[in-house]
Amino acid sequence: MALRDLTDQDLFYKYNKNKTWIEDVRLQRALLDRFWDKLEEEKSLVVFYVNSTPAVEDTKRVVVGIGRLKKKYKQTFYGKNEDKPGPNVVWQRRLNHNYPNEGFRIPYQEYIEQGVDTKNIALVVPPEYENEFKYVTKHVSDGALLYICERLSKIIEQIEDDIQKGVIKLRENWERHRIWLQTVIEELWDNRGKYPGVGSVLRFLGFSRGMSYQQEILVPLEKENDDILEHVTGILDGNKKPEKRYQKDFEKTKRKWSAYSKDEARKNLLLLLMKLEISEDQVERIIKKDARFNSGIRFDENQLVDNPYLIAENDKGAIDDNGKITSEKISLDTIDQAMVPLFYSPEKFQLDDDRRIRVIMIEELKKA
Image 1 (cartoon, one colour):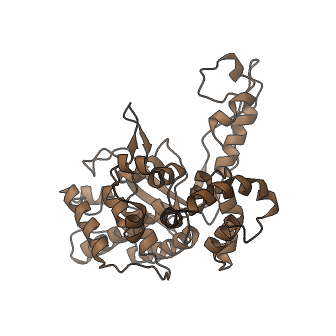
Image 2 (tube, rainbow, N blue to C red):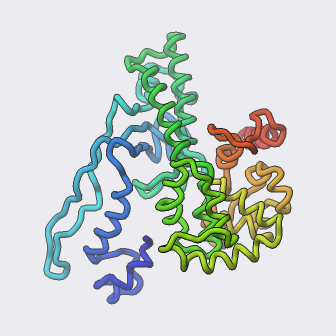
Image 3 (tube, one colour):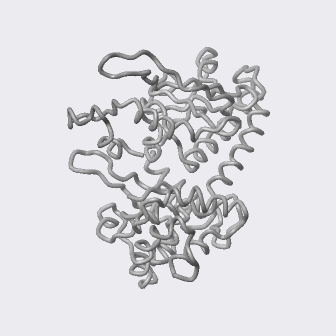
């Protein structure tokens, strides 16, 4: 639900077409409900970050902790006036997390106070995930959270090593945090599934409710161990009937799928992209040759299917004339999560595969 989808309904918007803010209280509540209803008590995770900290020289977003959501408090309101009859909504929402049983804080403060360098425990959000850590509060994808949690797991190993060597003195039970974090990582893999990009590919093919279809239909099917790729392609190929409420959505999508799938190489590339947790604009940028080449990926469809790591190695993303990022680059972690997943996959790459090692080395050289 985007701002532009609601402006025509805003009773106040019509007086100023240049507004970028929803003033109608009814619509504000609709937006807030859409956002906060996705958070589930005893299940959702909350990642805490700051824009700057003395612990890290880098002024970009720095993760300071993670926790399980324990309680989500009700929406609060404040007064009204003659122009805008209330009650008006307070955009902030109170949350409680289950610290320290399910969550922890990276001990930057303790390291600084004890004169220990924090560089080995610092977690800076990488550029490819920065967009998910903006505007104070945002929903974060399973892929981004997997990246964060896997880095946090290594940080805990570093902290435990520092404690054992007497480098730092801490009272918390870091072994408990490590065990909990492993549980979280398993949950995230389960939530991510094998084909997190299906919704984005469907949207690229003209299925406007592709993300809703993935969440409402495909996610439950996958949890029942159904092959959702077979399910979707069966419908797109006309071998299976679509769910009744999504029949019209599939009509347009099937025509576009048919056009693309006539070329076996492009069809295989679309199938590959269904395994990646990427956005609709990233799908379009990889599928369309000119956009792909402009992004720095000067390889054909067959080469990318044979070696998906070429995407992470060469992708520069897309930027408009004003320097604004219009499509994030596809990261090594995004490819890794698809190619070397925690779950079994017949196409699973080995960790020491030359194609994977090459891009890891290039990434490290870029940091040097």
